[in-house]
Image (tube, rainbow, N blue to C red; front, side):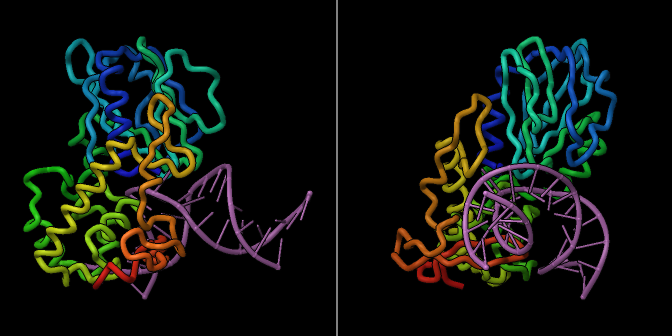
Length: 276
DNA sequence: AGTTAAACCTGGTTGC
DNA sequence: TGCAACCAGGTTTAAC
């Protein structure tokens, strides 16, 4: 489910309400991608600080008596979402983590359980550092320039779609936004990354930023089950030009959108306006 | 070294 | 209607 816009929408939804909240209990459901990595008791009495996002990860810093007390690295996987409940009801079959605080319960719902909640002493400490180490640049980092993107792509022979998805050059784009950004930039998804000109790399970065920013404004995409912390759906999917639209006309040139499979994932594109 | 399958798990949709 | 096959927003790990 969640790509950068959905994760950022989630971050914005929990940051303020949870700021300064005190953890009163923790409930674990079925196992997620990785174990929590500490006894749940260890979190009791800690206070939640400003929520950060790095790529598609969220970091909830914790403190105890004003002193840093580690934090929780959270990932929503493919089907996860976080909700904030004033009073949380009985957990459903897909509710696998509750952080109960004096300001409400943060609940992770994740049917496929590819998501994770992992304790670490710091973002730069194991196991968080290992998970964050391979992440590429933040797409909205002003220090990440078109030149930097072009330079990074020069060393990659894989198709540009695969490189975007890998997230080790630039983070944030998942299957939806990678397809949409490539369409907007007029770049064929199979284009070998190192063959992109500086000009086209610049167009790609601009398209990626525009696509992610637009999705952010619309509250993300809701394909089947994503919702923000208040339960509201995103609206971007209605504006998708190619994603999930195989056979339907391209909004720009009216040629039918095609679907192909790249490294096991569906890619949607328009052969008319996306060139190698 | 870089790139591509396989794996994780559940549920919805499609087709026979 | 029943059931098998396929598909789904991600990322790590193992295998070419």
